[in-house]
Image (tube, rainbow, N blue to C red):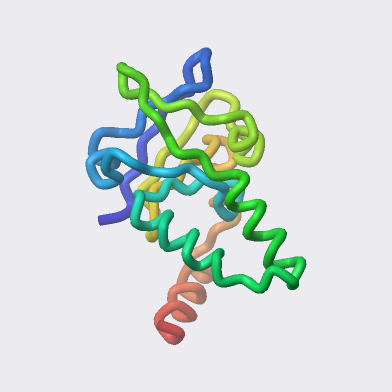
Length: 143
């Protein structure tokens, strides 16, 4: 099921908790990496294995593909919970997602997403139902 969101804050040591319902879905081993739109993707172990498998198929002589693979892999963090169930969000990922304090954790269509609350809100400031209808129609016709 997708579409559930949770508001959280980073603590003073840049740690956060994954909400219990989402944590249950992710399991014990999950990876945080860069996502589109300025968010972070949180992949359960099987999803990250699929990402790595896909990236391993690139042609190492095609610079754009190789750079993309390097960037994704370099910016991947295998989350480790402390005794209180908090995970660190590393500096490189916080910078990518512009996370300073307030965050939105969202169960997106493909994975869990972590957003800076301000970036999350900015994503939807110009949304109209016409735009949504057009996008939904494109998805329906291409799926």
